[in-house]
Length: 264
Image 1: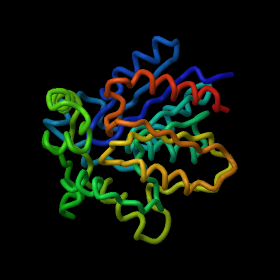
Image 2: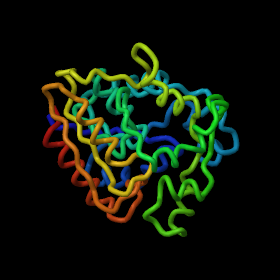
Image 3: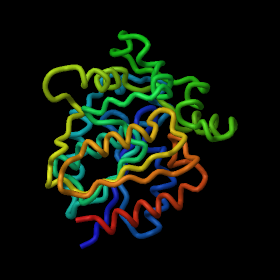
C-alpha cells in the first residue's frame, strides 16, 4: 500500500509554522499530514521568542525519540520530509527503521560530513562565534536571517517571513553538530551509512542556499554506501527557505511523486 501519511519535520530557527503551505497543499491531495514540533516547541512562535527556555533545554536524542514515538503509532510507515536540521533528523529516523521513504530538504549534515562552505560559516557565525552560546538560544537579526534563509527573496518578503517564522536556535545542538566530527565514538547525529535496510532517501538542494549549500548535501549523499536508493535533486535559484519561496508548489509535487514511486 502506498503511504497515506506525510510527516513534516521543521529545522532550526523556525517551527512547524514554516510548513503551513505544504500542510494544506498535501491535505488537499488527500494525505494525512503531521507536522509535530520538537518537544517544548508546541507553543506559538511569539511565545518561544518571549521565553526560549524550551529551546535551550532541547537535545537531539529527545527530538528523535519524540518523532519515533509519533511515527511508531501510525498504522503504516509514512513519507518523512525534513527541512534543514529536520533533514538530518529524517536521515536518523530512516536509519532507525522508521518511514517508508525520506526526503532531506536543504539538509544539515549527519556525522562525518566535513564540507564547510564559507557561506555556511557566515550563516552560523551568530551561534558559533562564542562557546558560551552552547548554553543559550541564539536568535538571528533580520539581516542575518536574510543572508542565511531568504537571500533570493525581496527585503519585504524576507522581513515578513522573519517576523512570522523566526525563533532562536539551540546553541548546544549546533555546537554539538560541529564538534561531532572531532570527538571519538558515535555522536547524536550519527547514522550507519552502510545500512541496507534503510528506506529510500532523496536529498533536495537549493542552488543559492547559504546556510546549507548543495555541496553539503552532495557530500552527505556520497557517504551512503548501502544497497538502497539515495538520490539528489537541485533546484536553481532557490534559497534555504525553499518551502516558502515562489514556485514551491512544483517542488512539493515533484518530491511527493518521487516519494510515492520509491516508498516501500
